[in-house]
Amino acid sequence: LDAAGVPTPATAMVSSPADETTLERVFERFEPPVVVKPNSATRGVGVTRVDDLDAFLGVCDYLDLVHDYRATGDKSFVVQEYLPGARDLRVMTIAGEYVGCVERRLPDGDGWKHNVHRGAVAEGVTPPPRLRALAERTARELGIDFLGVDLLVTDDRAAVSETNARPTIDDATKYEPDFYDRLAALVRERAETA
Image 1 (tube, rainbow, N blue to C red):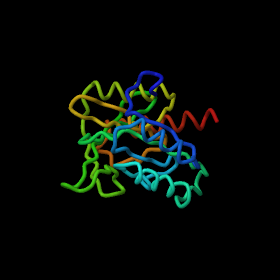
Image 2 (cartoon, helix red, strand yellow):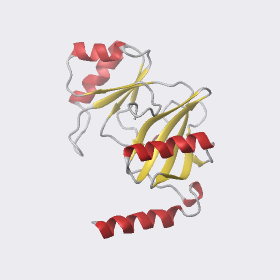
Image 3 (cartoon, rainbow, N blue to C red):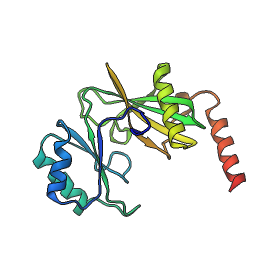
């Protein structure tokens, strides 16, 4: 996405295991804190915010030695710029077009992970046109027909933090009225061409 000019937080991909010198070089590219995300996990499992090099190295050890990768075997992870105070939006697209959006909000003063499976609440919202366009552009750049685009939004910046080709589908009030019809049509189309 970065190569296509889509705004993202500063991000580095690390193949695990990595030696300590490599990890130190990766960490030095960022202004702490940073977010560390296993590449193959879901629901926020293993996602950690770290404030210093020692904590970063400890998280990397955990990801190499303990984290459960049975689903994919992919032990790579992402190190990403932390955007303090950012709003967290999941914008849904079908065939590169906007079909709905939720803002994930934390209970008052509770943590920093905006993950619904960790206690955040997803509320249907209507994003401004520029954020809809950013999500649509992201889906088109990736060429993925059904995509959840996670946006981090601050007062002066919007960035795609990650994308999900198998996003959770929430209740109908969070989507455009024709969402389920469009999703069903996409599934039928794919089944007929398979």
